[in-house]
Length: 90
Image (cartoon, rainbow, N blue to C red; front, top):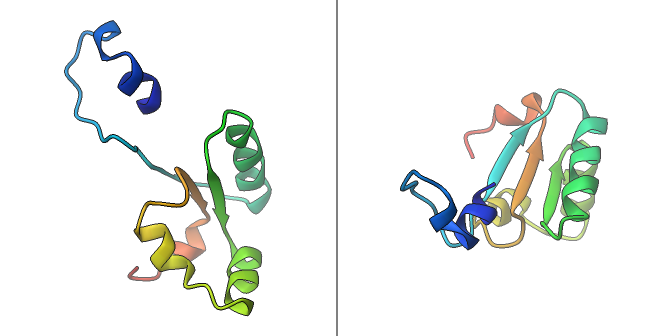
């Protein structure tokens, strides 16, 4: 929605605050739902990532500090996360 607004702000009545590269965080109750969201938004050329145990383990094996990359808001436009991974301060 924010990408559309950025491209055509004159089409919307409100003067909404936005960023040149908006990001979204989706809290999902299940890993499968997160995977579906990632697959669907990827079809729209939106970069997405599922922050779950599997991806955390895979990234740790190759030495990637995943939380830092997500916080930098550069690599992915949408990050799906399950509630159990929201306990960390980061």
